[in-house]
Length: 67
Image 1 (cartoon, rainbow, N blue to C red):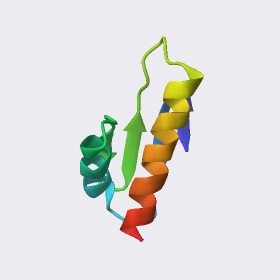
Image 2: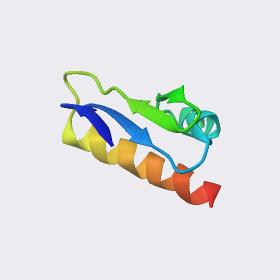
Image 3: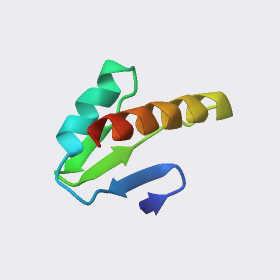
C-alpha cells in the first residue's frame, strides 16, 4: 500500500484492477485503477468511520469473489 493520509493506492499481485473496479462499482463503491495492478482509494474529506467500514466490507467481498 502506498499513499498519504486517506489517499491510498493498493498494489495487487495480478493485473485485476479493472475487474475489481467493476465489482466495487456494482456495490456502490467508487475506486479506480491507476494501473492494471493497482487500485486507488480516495474517500471524501468528511468520511465517517461507518463509511470506511462499509467500503472495507465491499472491498473484502469483491476480493473474495475474485478468488
